[in-house]
Length: 163
Image 1: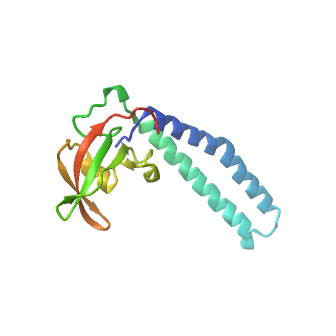
Image 2: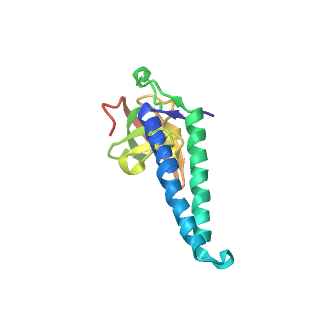
Image 3: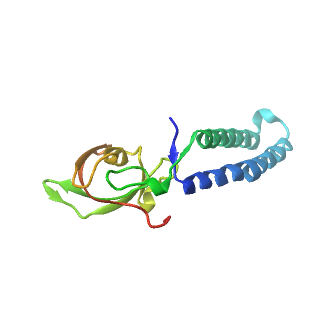
């Protein structure tokens, strides 16, 4: 399934991919060359480490290329606030023992653009998944590792600018 990305997320991913291809690949290649100079490869931990790093970098490159080639770029001008979708900012209040807790605000992003420390959650996270498609006033239930949590959607809005 194609991942839905904002134009900004798409461009950031392209930038990361370019850095991996042009900078990181060369750095890892240098580490391999240096490690080869240490001699016997059968007991060369620096060489093994560099080769493992190279494999991880190549896997990451393939992953980013796949995401970018299949990505659907969201037309942010067509976002609406009638129900929660990727790109919306959602203000919710947890309902705990029948009482509403203080409201929290989350920006719903793709898994690629998510950054929980900045209140940007993935549409694939337990809370993001539970919110998708719901409207203001709806009470939704999210299955989290800590158990089920209930939230009321207080507001759905559009982002003013990238945070």
